[in-house]
Image (cartoon, rainbow, N blue to C red; front, side, top):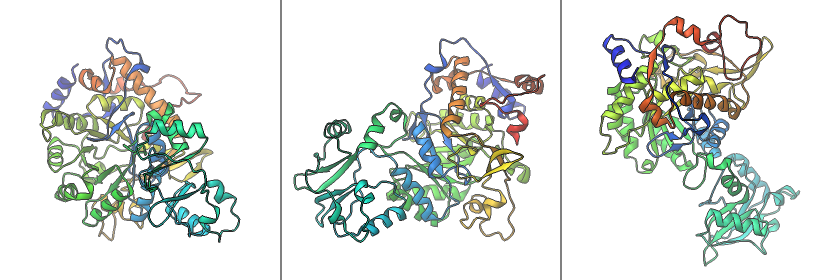
Length: 513
């Protein structure tokens, strides 16, 4: 059945559909699953190699998850249940994890003591240990390498005492990444400062980062124009959040996610307009949400949003629909909101503002369905919460290895010193909190790379069954049908006791828990 016909028929009856209400129609295919393209857009200016975003939750995304996901081709959103300084620190760690050309290298003064240099590196959270030494005029005086620091037992010595100052390998500022790789490989040097005719430092390449970027895996990384990993961060809609947005911009954040449980509000629209007008945020994409109806999409796009997050209440740890009685089943929400994009002229652009489907995904097939309904990418919480790279606490329950997972509207998240959870649910001044989420445990699942291999292979398989060579083709051609409870039961293993778990399958009871 054509997608538009199904959703129109449901809307005529006042019905809306969730992931478990629908399946995709198999069709004639000339597409092998490994041949499909799953590249997409996160926002107007940020492309992804995989359609996966990690949720801005305090048990899902801090710098480790953001780094791992960006290396796989997605992007992570640093949660806001952190102090402003800590959130900036997490963004900085992602942006400094990998570089192409470093336009503003961290430099040290020849007179700085080694103990002060090491203290500064630790305080800033920087994990690199090779630093150019420059004089007061910005001229390169030498290089302090990691081995120089490692073998310096007297921490009271200065950078001038231990730096390498003779036979330094340098190159002109216009040196490309490919040229830098060849130069460093030929001379067996791991640092390549770029200096102008006056000897002033204009940039730098490092062997580790250049080699990683040029490797086969490096081609999949989500990186900015300078070759640094991309990262997003969640903020609120209060006046003080504009200052945090500016601080995150200074740290190099690629996108800001205006994060509220209900995004179709006056506060959200005014905050979006303020940030859109701020001079330091002009080059940063701003994502707004969460919403679930087309009129909300229109309002946010007109206020300047570069992507819209759709989903109110579908998450496995969310109780918004039960507590408040408001929400909208996720597949219909995604379909309705994406149709609004295709039917509207968006700032004179032929490309719609991307829709991010946030929540409700329990199986890899749900990813295929969400993209087919029109989403450009999906935001995952539950499916990533059991990964090694999450900040969730690891515990053992009934002999099984588990990770803690909670909603940002849970009582525990709202009681944090940082008030991101309270503010997200408009309870910043309330003495007695009203939770809209729960706290629980999810099975430990291993590295995010292993987990996403299973989920993305499932997506590719689904696209193969449909005959879609790309996400765009999937959105244009996929047919949907509604299924009955018996059809849903038939889709799962039945009539057997499962004796060996599969890495890509959980029973409906496990998925719901």
